[in-house]
Amino acid sequence: MPEVSGNQALIVVALLVLALLVAWWIFRRRPERVRAETPDVLTPGAAPAERNTLLVDAPSAVAPPAGAIVGGIGEVVSAAAAAEAEAARPAPPPIAVAAGEPDDLTRLKGVGPKLQAMLRDLGVTRFDQIAAWTPADIAAIDPHLGAFQGRIVRDGWTEQARYLASGDVAGFEARFGKV
Image (cartoon, rainbow, N blue to C red; front, side):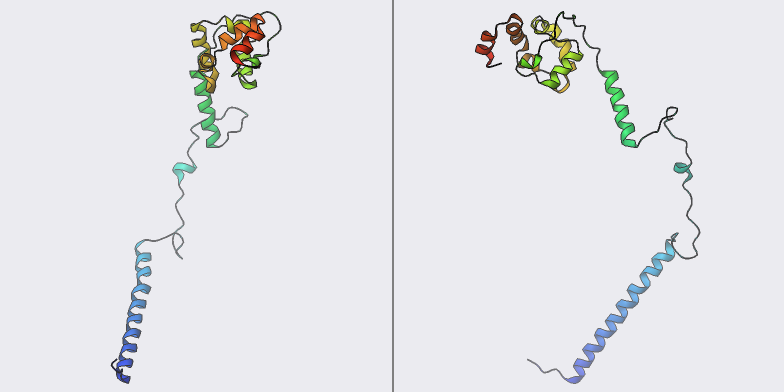
């Protein structure tokens, strides 16, 4: 390895110091130039920020109902979506009123408490009603079952209801399993 003389070490140190001074001068001056080109409201002596009158002073696009408190945007959007869904939903089909005590529709395979409540809201309370459904009746009722659409045909409710309406529990259990 070549020997480094005292002068060479001194020259290397001087060049490093000079490079650091030049870098400091370049980077220190840059923010001042940028700040001078783009004034900011936080700069000392700058004018106050302009008020955004377009958004702040604009009248509300939706007039609140008298005496009601308007919620956030999420509540407004969900209320509008619910109103639109309600308007788009077809009217419930006319269901013949069944005489007698309502049956426990949860005995049908594929019908749980939530689905039973939906059917009761549509006026379906007895097995003999379901047993008498025609394909047109099924087509009219199915859209009102929401996430349960298609269950009537897929689970064979009309066939199940015929067994239960006639009191043939043994036939039902032989065909569909335990009640």
